[in-house]
Length: 315
Image (cartoon, rainbow, N blue to C red; front, side):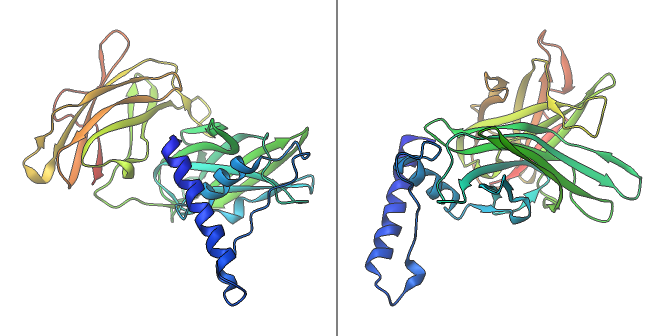
């Protein structure tokens, strides 16, 4: 999180608190209560960390998925959030927070592991998982009260099958295993495609485009993950050990496939993601054609120009 974003969240929160304190007793709808435990409670966050966590988790963009809520040793409550409280095909971020039931304070140190998506194909009598970050990490290093993981669902829920999600959480030597819980995964519109796969021999890889709705007209940092399906299809697909270069060639299919200059190939970053630069010169639907090369520069998927491997986004 950038400094400007932190200041915005803190400012917004202070505004809400001020509005609540000035509203009087006639309009309790504006009263906002934020619990800041006493400093001697070493498990809980300080005032700034509490403000940041509260502002982020109540900003209207993320919403809790209540069916994934759980408790640890009847002393802590863990909550799980996603964008708008929904899941869709492709990349989805999960956010986790832990509070003490005794005082409502956000807990500073906790872990979330074993994040596992599982699709049961009812018509075929089989199961499969999906690309996922199975261990949550700090959402932002400047405050410790929110953890983040992600799942890239391969398909939507429906007559063909249903998705379940499970995880484990722990703090202070106490833990909980949240069992498989059915979640709804929505289909994307026909114009959108944010998840693609390719094969190298018998191995299957998945290209998950991160937060495509954040792309804007102009120059964008574009981010993706490359995951590899393991021999056990029911286990989450981990990030591929291979190193690739992903060249991109954006075109507008509704505008004669004209392209846009200033694009930079996606390359592997220290955090395991692939990042590059995507330039979108105007609003509309874009096909982002992909040319995947291995560490030696050999083409392993897609190709130059109008390849048959592409993401589709609308801005």
